[in-house]
Amino acid sequence: MNMAHSQTEASRVIRGWHFIVEAFAAIGTVLIGVLMLIICADIAARNLMGASLPLVSEGGALLVVTLVALQLAATVRAGRLARTEFVLDVVATRAPRAAACMQAAFNAIGAAILGTIAWASIRVLEKDLNAAEYIGITGMATLPTWPFRALILAGFAVAAIEFVVATLGAIRAVVKAGR
Image 1 (cartoon, helix red, strand yellow):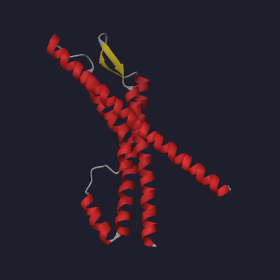
Image 2 (cartoon, rainbow, N blue to C red):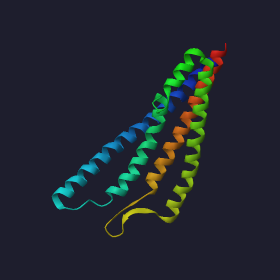
Image 3 (tube, rainbow, N blue to C red):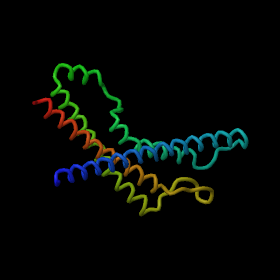
Image 4 (spheres, one colour):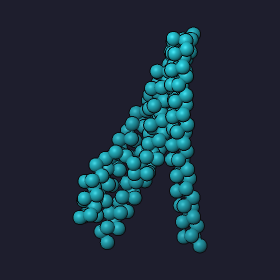
């Protein structure tokens, strides 16, 4: 009974984690739509009024980084990162354990890099909060930067954790291939 309960609990945690990863990706997708609307509105303003809308370039730049950070964990989980799969595929056919070790190393390095980026982002977010950083022109249109920075931090942290999950899966594959 206790073993079944712990498996049910683990399954619940895994489903919850998958929900978080997919929710971040969904928020990123919504932000893509927002960015498209902003760009289309700016194009219309340039053609109709001969002037750009405020905050489009600065906001667009922050939105691009934010949506990439938010969708990165789902990309990792889906195995859609750009890499040289042909090398890994050749190694996997000849030496499955070596390929699993390479995959574990790749994932561990990804976790370390994204964890470092997330850690560095904490200081950027703190600076933005303490200095009340904003983008835009005072008196015309401004937008605080901290919400973007918070989403970027959260996105990279979730992606780093997803890389850790992928590393553990690859280690399990190494152990399984060794049997």
